Structures are given as C-alpha cells and as structure tokens.
Length: 476
Image (tube, rainbow, N blue to C red; front, side, top):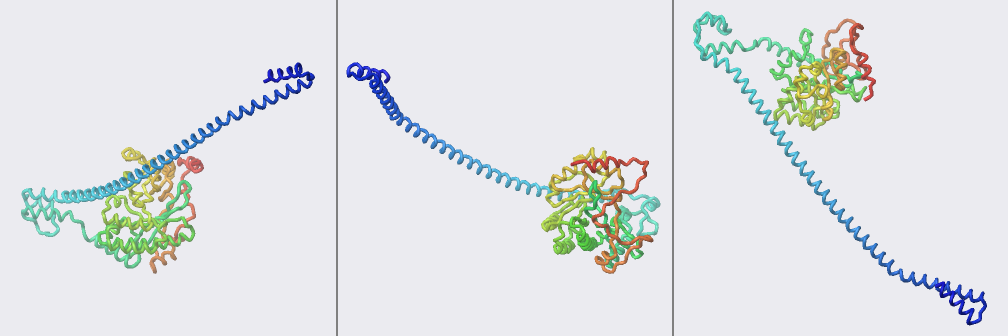
C-alpha cells in the first residue's frame, strides 16, 4: 500500500506537472484510504468466525447443563437408595432387638425353671437318701433325730417315719416369725413406720443432691427395727405392699417439702419385688404415682439388682408402665459388676448404687467383666449415673475420685436422720415420736442446700486430703 501511494505521487509529479507538496499530499491520502479499506475488509471477513465461536460456546454451555442435570438425577437416586437401605436396616435391627428381648425373656424363664428344679432336687435329695437306709436301732435314732412331735422314745422307726422326722427337723421355728409378723402388722396399723433420710452428695463438692428414704419400724416398746430385720417377714405375710405404699406416700410428701427449697433435689424410694409382681399391690401404688406424676422427675424408684435379673412378664409390664409415666429407676444391693448398661437404660434405669468396697476391691475387679475405673464412663454413655454407697472413710473418697464417681452415700457424709415433727405429723398423722438423746431434737430433716463436711480425723493419720483438694480444683 505504501508503494502504490508513492508511485501515485511520483506519477502526478512527473506527468501531471503537480508540485511536490501536492503530490505528497495526494500520496498520503491514497495511503490512508488503502489502510482504511484493508481494515474494513479484514473486519468484514472475521465476522463469520465470531459467529461460529459464539455458536460453539452456546453448544458447550448446553452440554454442560445437561451433564449437571444428569449428575443431579443420579445423586437424587443414590440418596433415595441410601434412605431406603437405612430404613430397611433399622427395621431389621428393631425386629432383631425384639427377637433378642423375647429370647432373653425365655432364657430368664428357663433359668427360673432350672433354679426351681434344682431347689426341688436339693430338697428331695436327703429324703431319697434316707428312704433306702435300713432302720437303725432305737437309741441311735432317737439321739440323732430327736423328733419334736413325739416326745416318747422311738422304737425302730420305719423308713417313711425317718423321712418325716428328718424334714420336721429342718422346718424353722414358727413362734419367732409369727411374733415378728404380728409386730409388723401392729406397727402398720398404728402408723409406727418412720421414714429416715440419708443424703446422697456430689463428689468432690459434697453438696446434697438426693435423699434416700430409709424405713424404720417401731414396736410397742419404742424399739427401732431396721428394714433388713422385718422385710422378709413382711413379704412372707403379704404386708410388703402396704409398707411400700406407705413409703411412697411419705416420700412424696417429703419431696414436696424439699422442692420448696431446692427444685433439683430428688428422693429415692425402695420398692420390693413382691410389690412389683403382685397385681393388687402394684395397682394401688400405680394409682398413687399416677396422681403425683408431676414429681416423676424427682422421685426415683429403687429396686435390687436381683430383682432386675429375675424379671418376669408381669414385672416387665409393670416397669414399662412406670417408665411410660416418666418415673426413673435405680438399682441397689449390687453384688457384682456384670451388667448390660444398654438394656438397663432401655428399661428406665438412671442410677446404679455400688458399694465402695466392691468398686475398690482389686480381687473382684480382676474377675469382673469391666474394670471398676471404667464403669462410670461406660454407664455415662447410656445416661446412667454411678453412686458409690457405704462410704465410711476419706481414703475411699480419694480413690473413688480417681474412678470418676460423681455421687457418694454413706456414714462418712451423714447417717440416716428422722423427719421433723411437723413432717412426721403431716405424713403419718398422730404418730408417736421415737426417743432421742437429751438436748437434741428427735426429728429433723436435712436441708437440701447444705454441705456435709467429713468427720474430724487424727492429724497423724495420712488421709490424702491434699490429693482430694488437687482433684477438686483440677480442670475437667
């Protein structure tokens, strides 16, 4: 283009006779025109390529959108399959758990039947042995057997007579049991069942969190009988239902008084296995608990470990009825650490009381299914709190803190205390107060907010108080 423009200027200058300045201007104008023409022609030539690129970009975007939609559909299908598989797995697990529970009930029934047969065999064994023994001379038999039914001398007894005399020797003396049953019945009829409260404190703060209602019975002379002294006689006479109902009644009334001062306090009330298995006695207790359902979170029903291991169909149904109404359960009288926390939690158990001596017994820990130091953590995973009971020394407290035990109970913190006179009057009517030492009130109820300090200990005895203080201030 520059050559053409220069040639045009030279031609005009040489041929046309135009001056040099004018020829240069014409040549520059021609060059500018050629440059503009070239640029426009190139722009017009590039337009079809841009359109193709835009078409290609649009097609690629559409393909990408289709792929994203396909991936979304596949992801939705996978999620649906996962949800379906999860629901199917849960249904299968529920059915398996139901079958396992049924098998567990059958195994328990089988164990009860085997135990009953073993008891029957153990009773029948001496009889069968004596039945095949030849009768011995009269003096040895009379000296060894000493039958109570026939005071006259025995003369060559027959085998069946020896059996009757042998079984009669093993029978218990009925006089003492009848007298105790009469005492228990008289005490129930005359409202001489007293409720003592023993605190359950938090560790290591030793702040009262719960109380256990302990039953005491007063005879005609004002002598106190502990629960272990009359419970068996009451169960044999069919009076345990009335005792448990009275304990629940007074426990609820005490709980109402305590919750006025502290909403977080709770009361443990013991219920016997005979009450749980008796339809009439349990129906009476259930009606009373249903009427006081608002206190279900603070009223803990306590059963023995042996009771939970021997649950039948009736007992399971009654426990389920209590749990459905919001009541929580506790297990005491623990004899070993063989337990299933998941099963206990499913049945409504939220507390387990284990004697401190059992937790700290190294010989027992070596033979148990789980080490005592791991028991609190294992129970806590299922919402069950471990309570160490029967604590009587500071050394035991320090060792239990190493086991992460959160609650403690025992004479180290406080002994069971009777109710105040107004509480006893409100719960038992016009009941006679038990004798007390001079200068002290015969009935008093502990305050839920107070702390129970340890007993004074000789300074020369190493107690580990420094370790206890370090544990109290150590961060979690």
